[in-house]
Image 1: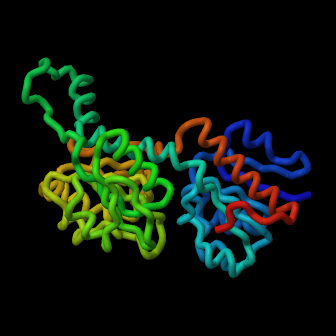
Image 2 (image 1 turned 180 degrees about the vertical axis):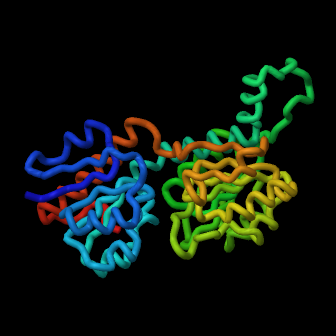
Image 3 (image 1 turned 30 degrees about the vertical axis):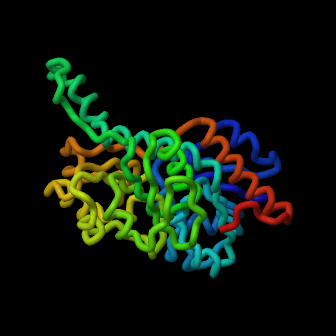
Length: 315
């Protein structure tokens, strides 16, 4: 009987979709698999449904694997060393598409909260220190007519661009490795630096790869306008967190909105102490409908593999 490990509890509808003839194990822990745990799991299970943070590093694959497939729950798979998996003859799949709109919505929420000082305002009310409305209180950045810069014009970047243009009257500039057809009020620029220079809001929407690690660094932050804000809904290690902290502390940029962190779930104390930053607990795909869709897509990848069909979402 095929042995399947699901590394974190998933919605009931997802677990119910797993064939009954599969020997299923669901980890009860909410923490990710450590490298040691991942290495052991590869030796015990025929298939694994992992997710964010599970440490399937090169070392985890060093002794080979009984496992045939890692059907990742999530579009991002930077926690899996794909080259090491291939060398060990382990197939890797992911769940693109299902997360697009939910993540784009969170990006717009972060943009609004950061530019209009929503988090700061709520903290003021909850503290009991709010003294009432007056004309110059908590003035923020109006989005209409401003420029949204997007680094990475994939599914999520395009979804945010449409919301920004058609919902808020923003202009969009973007950088992408390949040429993309641009819609109304959207234009592609040659480099990330060119985008950063003109953006009032700079959105990070690239996948986490060795090439994008610390892509948003001190040099790039230095090109941004003093009144601009940075938004990250991609992966935490794309942004050099130390450089971001310094840029915020010195007023080099006006603010930031983060849904992901470089050493997640650890958030540096300087970020926690700042008022000009919005911090969310990785809510990008946090709706029941989306998590079910992601899980069902991962299960479909598994079923296709077991039945010898083409994989819907091979990495």
